[in-house]
Length: 433
Image 1 (cartoon, rainbow, N blue to C red):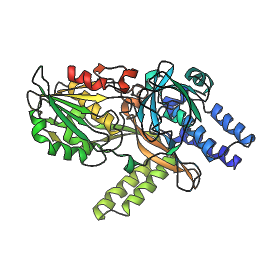
Image 2: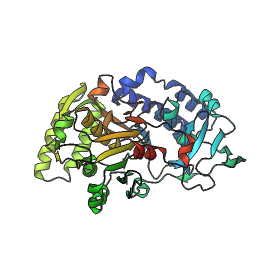
Image 3: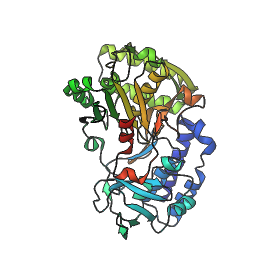
Image 4: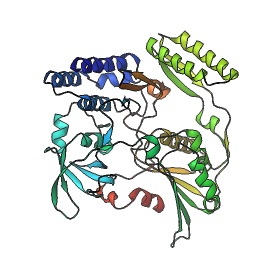
């Protein structure tokens, strides 16, 4: 099996180099050889199993800083994604617990002083590259690194210190991890402003539209609307359309606002073959008109096979959105966890501001920066493992001015501090503006 692990790891590197749309941007700063050497050394010492191998691979992929590239295992693999039951965030040379899930031994505000006997700086010195999904300290995501540790030295809020043996919990699937949106409202006693707070965690279904319909009267009467998309990543933009009527000072056609979508698709022979297979599966469940359209796309993919990056322009249908009430203004709360469809919503808000038709400001921190890349492909490496990566990217990314690693910056920055573990400083700032 050791030889198989090494072959899989080398196949991953080859696929990324030959087929991944982000490789031209990542290649200058990416060095897979130390990871390949580490896997080979562990195999030579007979210390490599599914779990340790997956740890090496996921850590290596994190150095790309692209959330669209990830490692998958099916139900038959010995390794399955897991968590340590809480989430932490870097502040200075320590990690602060910001969310408690399954492991209730921890409390928000607890400080992780050491991981497996080493400080954060020790980990930074000994880790290969930067497997933290980011280089800037306040954008580093350490949860996957913590989950691979066995014990942590914790300083609790009362000042006591404790060496805690970490537990392992299965990572929740998409459906079971979804949380419902929430609505709150209050009247500011000093200004008599009616403030509405809408909190969303995903746009997978029509729950956003349902929430807004249920509270349409309260929202229409509010002078300040706060829309929280800080941890939104999953879903489709269409399920977030109900929010866009809160963004504009006049009627807006989304097609005219955002313009055509230009994508550079990497049509390697491998990507073209994988894409054709996707389309053929789709055709099996389509009606006759759909099959004809899909066949035309298959023909297009076939003609592009082996040509490398091909410029493709997608034109959206007209889509009109009404203006928000005249005396109403919206604040959009963002963070480094805002990605996917959440980042698309932020991009629309910022484009509206730039074009003079926006009534919305972003408050918080820069988004994840993952929307440069799209059109995901899943490649089966073995019967158990698959690699997922995007074969397309935006024109901005292709021209070297994408948002990978930096994200979309907010209009009002609220730096992270441990105080945020007990107080919602970003929302408080939006209420005060």
